[in-house]
Amino acid sequence: MTEFGIFGDIKIDLDSDFVATAEVQRGPHNFFDQQMIADLASGFEALDNDTGCRAIVLCAEGKNFCAGANFGSKLDSGVPKNLAGKGSSGKGRHLYDEAVRLFSTRTPVVGAIQGQAVGGGLGLALMPDFRVASKDSKFSANFARLGFHHGFGLSATLPRIVGMQKALDLLYTGRRVSGEEAFEIGLCDRLVSNDSIRTSAKELAAEIATSGPLAVDSIRQTMRGDLAEAVRDATAHEKVEQDRLATTNDFKEGVKAMSERRPPDFSGT
Image 1 (cartoon, rainbow, N blue to C red):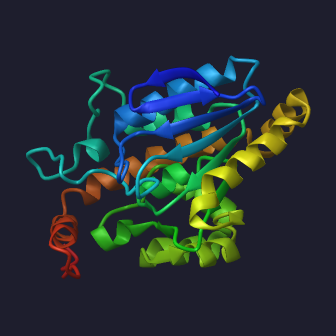
Image 2: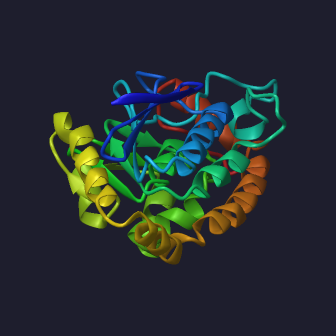
């Protein structure tokens, strides 16, 4: 394995078997912001242009794959910067612009999902073509429990993977799904032991990489070539609703209740 490059907090290595490993290095929880998604997109775009890469394993160091946005970073309004603002890059691009860039990349991706994939972290976990998890992995679209609208393109990605009714269940309730249930409903594709997640993801990526790269690219474009545009349309609406709900008392209460580790008391205002 040789180092391909460092993109902010993303370290990418490339094997001789045409498989790249992109590791998010923000452990233990790997909270995301605009800059992290921009760096991932830049790394994946670079891999798209390297003929030595035919598949990518997306993984993260530490306890959780991605525990969502860091609610410890807020604007004066109390709205998290990485949900409402331009992020830390100073480029004036919204988080969801970078998410569309990420979904627009062409190389197949296998996600190694350990621990939690929560909120926007679930959105990130749904970017890969496949997900490998364990029974201890946890998936949650917990936005409604914050009094907030979901984002990161989940309006487009989640129904494609689990179907509309199950997507509505997960979005309305915000409940946490175990790895076992995730496997049953198709939210993850392989269920292995905790210490085998990354190895199994690499094995699947390596298997993909043995297929004809032109054929895989053609098939991927046929099967999910419209996904980036669907995410673009979804996030445009999601952002409007998030901006609206971010001004409500319910959202303030949801964030406060989460920080205090108690059930929220929503007023509907």
